[in-house]
Length: 107
Image 1: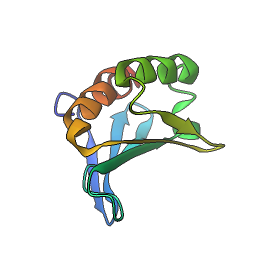
Image 2: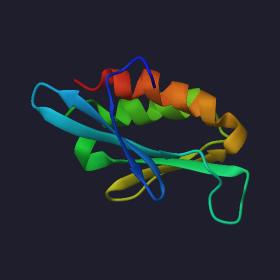
Image 3: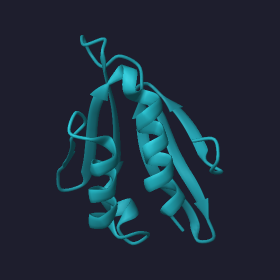
């Protein structure tokens, strides 16, 4: 995610990324490539729909992200959060997908 100017906050559960915009900082996603719970092969990322829906076409973005991530990493959305659990070995690929199809699109 090094090609975008992002603010990074280190938390207990991983890294939170925000993107500076002309109208203020926008929370983009939380990314944790460290083992999740007792499953040392599982990582996760999540983002808030309400933080992004006014900045991009969320339905198109979700479809594009899912297509780029493939079936092995399904995005699940609730009322507020969209979450993705993925194999830890795919963390670099997942980060590239988020950088290209989510972070770069936020204005």
